[in-house]
Length: 112
Length: 171
Image (cartoon, rainbow over all chains, first blue to last red; front, side, top):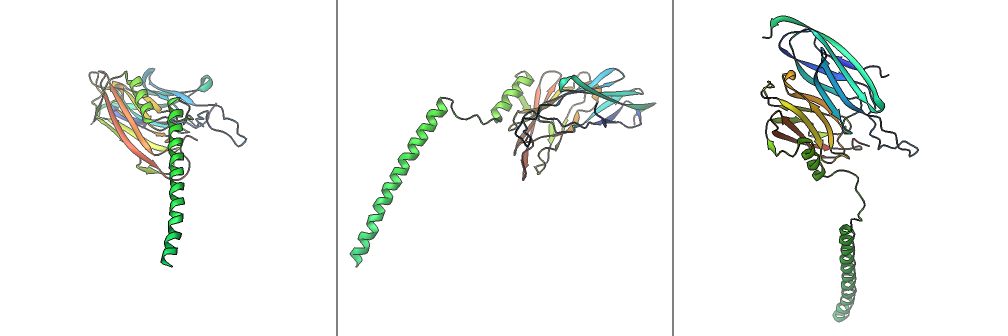
């Protein structure tokens, strides 16, 4: 289990506002090509997929190939119309999954 | 005295000429050998992708649609020494409504070991077609961002990134 996954959203928003979701997870993202000091290949260990759902509905997903940095940071935007929870799931090699969620309170008055 | 010097200078000229010819012959034969090896496909594999691989991968990802210019803004530092952590942001000019939205954003690095970097899947729920992340850039090269719209049209944005000092980002 990886500790320290982070999902950041604003605490509050107006109805219909577009909010930024920022995510980060500590992960080495080994490509499987690197060699250690003894010349042995370091086995591949990579996050291959990221999914973000809002109240059970998928709003954003990503497929990572080898070109994504270690400790992948990702930010994107979501339009919110009700209070709810963002749940982010990272799927790594060997069927490991990590999840983290963040809550947002949406007020009824329309976005300016 | 003058004659003597003339004779002296002439002699080395001739040998130099011979050496030059020999060298030329060697270079041509080496060149021929190289061409032969290349034709037989015996050249050592370089192990990393070339821009044509990125093009092939892009066609694969976008279903072969012809990419148009515009609508995609790819921001990447022009020069960086941290090849393993290059911050990029991709913004696509789109209203993100049910009728007109961005379906996918593909990021490719032409000269990375494997050209595809990441694919992002969006929809009308996003409200704004913008993503930012950090990527590995193996060497100085052009990074591509392709946006696939919901009607299947493809827009392509590109930006050059120069890596200075240190090792590349994929090592």
